[in-house]
Length: 427
Image (cartoon, rainbow, N blue to C red; front, top):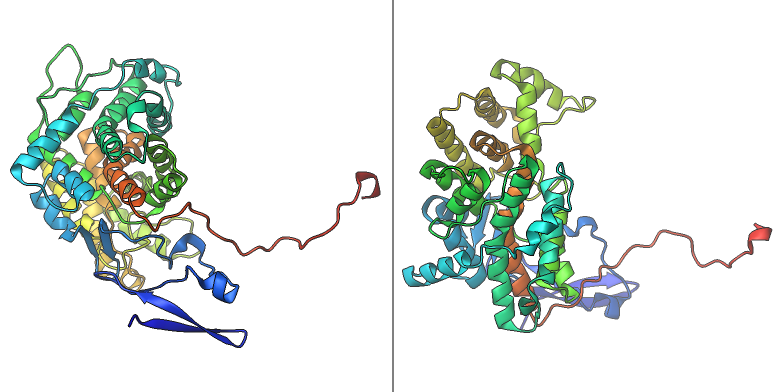
């Protein structure tokens, strides 16, 4: 017999079923709470509410654990590839060699954009933010690919998923090229997913572009580390949009818009700007003192996380990757010296230990992206590129879930009670 929890309200006792996942805390099933008790729950930010069942990603913030279909993120980042992780998120299992080749080939064949979309880019101002362009272009895909917008058709959903994963690097690279006034680079099917993106971003038509394997591997890891992160704000936005039956391109565009927020996708840019503000290691004590001062507006960016109350497992991989990239590129960046020293000091400082402010994935990713040559305006666009895989996987899972309904959160109303209208001349 299933376990139940009891709630006492207005002299009545009600039972709430307790649901258990494969790992993680149990949850109370409150779907019938209003019907039985006449009350709702109040949970701003939905931080204590499970809105769905999911087999894709699991996070244990207290222990610093991130699993994709059971596989630890550090193992995937160090041993796998982004294409393998994309397949894993979509299918729940790692692919064999033949399946991986077929999947990678399918993605490669979808990397080109409809030629008319080039005209779409020219409608934006030259100084438009890449995220503004990506929101518009991704949403506009539904106007070009009518054969993959029927969400009730499993084949069309698969085609839409492949198209989104494949075309996002092209869309992001074109946004970057447009800001520079350089010609767009068409995809090269002989290159890997990441190598192709690097060439489209940094290559130019007059000369060949040689992909640096160290940079390629670093970008592959960054994409893996950002591929999915459970029910975060942008993923929840994609699910909420898809609950209405919206087409997949519109849903992913909604996710991009949510990710654009500085509290979500812009954290690595903020962390890099903070490291640049500190400038050199000998100034770190001054800024740590400022961070501890409640009256000082300065805050240490790249430390702490909404979910993780331990060391972000992604940050460990990112730290090693940063060292590899800076060493290979010969970058003598004082920002990285500041980052390493600041991390060591903060990990030993009682203030940060007590508040569980550990370095997160954003602490190092901005340093790496800057060293490779990306401007800070592209950081969130790269995040969106990688996260598209997770969004698509979550979208597919939700569409296939018979329990899902159109999203409709309730509220605790605090406005005026009913009152009668008074004609304007009597007010």
